[in-house]
Amino acid sequence: MRLADATTMRVGGEAERWIDASTREEAIAAYTALIADDEPHVLLGGGSNTVASDEPFAGAVLRMRTAGVVVLPAAERRTRPVGDEEPDDASVIIRVEAGESWDALVARTVAEGWSGIEALSGIPGSTGAAPIQNIGAYGQELGACLVGVELLDADALEVRQVPASQLRLGYRDSALKRGDLRGLVLSVDLRLRRSTDGLSQPVAYGQLAQALGVDLGHRVPLADVRESVLALRGAKGMVLSDDPDSVSAGSFFTNPIVSGRFAAGLPEDAPRWSTAPEATATIVPLDADTRIPVREPVESRVKLSAAWLIERAGIGKGFALPHSRAAISRKHTLAITNRGGATGEEVADLARFVQTRVESELGVHLVPEPVLVGLEV
Ligand SMILES: Cc1cc2nc3c(=O)[nH]c(=O)nc-3n(C[C@H](O)[C@H](O)[C@H](O)COP(=O)(O)OP(=O)(O)OC[C@H]3O[C@@H](n4cnc5c(N)ncnc54)[C@H](O)[C@@H]3O)c2cc1C
Image 1 (cartoon, rainbow, N blue to C red):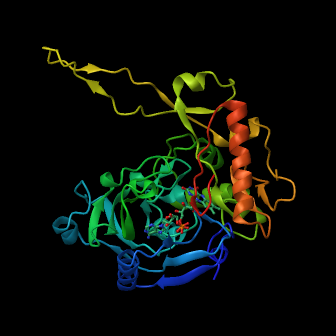
Image 2 (cartoon, helix red, strand yellow):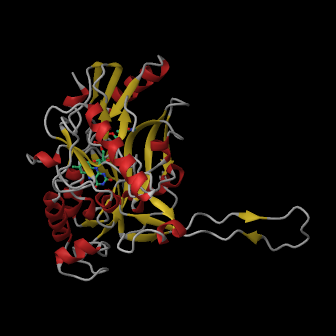
Image 3 (cartoon, rainbow, N blue to C red):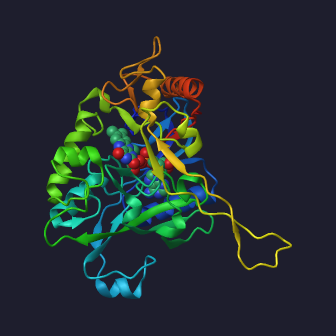
């Protein structure tokens, strides 16, 4: 089978061996053997954040197909702490097996009246992959409710609970994505609020607030948030459907984070958002007899809109290189789509073209968001 048949971008060559793990025992046995035998491998959930080369892959693809969602009983929550904080009665902690569909999980939590992930409706893929890039959209991010993951550690080859704090989650990033921590996520623990009034978390994204007809910070029925997010995403080709613009890996580039000084030099209409400053560096001079540490001034960090930068660099919706079947989505500048029969290399060529244009026009380096297999961008 080809990786193209298992990824939403529909590119990628034949893999030598496929393993579909439908129980955690199968997953543990398969992954342990892959590591012990040092066999090249790719882990896959729904393949919605993976873009692969069309060269044959001389190794195994381990796909997580495990299922199950349980509410952790109060006693277990007390005796088996899985996170940094103690749970309280207003919240529920659920343990979700890695192979569970993320969007089906969101639908279920909305139906149960549990808030915390309603704005993450419509994101394709598996729950086990959600912490890898700390999925986020429409003002919510997984990290806000992630308690921890159950990881089959690739180095120790043992299963252990890893609290969210040790995953060092960042914007579309984690220790697992960076490779600082290697392993197979077996299950994910989430803490959600029991919403007795059926209302969502405060709406934290302008476009969503506008679609719902409320001000930022208002709470609305959970189901309304889900419905509005799905409608907004649908209009951008950002839910998997028959729409040819949804044949993608979602956003191809992350929104770049630059220094405040650099951002100030960009055209006035460039959208920008302040982000939390980096941890303060503390310098204690060697000869100091003072007990007051000297703090380095922290430079502000500003997040820019990758879509705006791409458009400003002259690349619009629907753009394609000559004779290429990869194109910028006609609905969303940030998504690269497969117009039918594109190769992974065509996708990478377009991504590199976008990168080069944005860098030469605006001096900003765009970083790809999906995980690339056998490709370089
Ligand atoms: C139309 C569309 C819209 C999207 N919108 C968003 C969005 O709004 N926000 C957002 O954040 N993302 C978005 N994405 C990206 C993607 O859906 C998410 O990143 C999702 O979490 C990927 O899940 P997956 O199971 O498909 O991952 P895969 O592509 O299968 O895997 C992604 C990475 O995770 C690793 N991995 C997968 N499962 C495991 C596991 N059990 N243990 C360890 N490693 C594992 C893989 O090796 C790979 O490196 C979108 C994608 C598409 C196609």
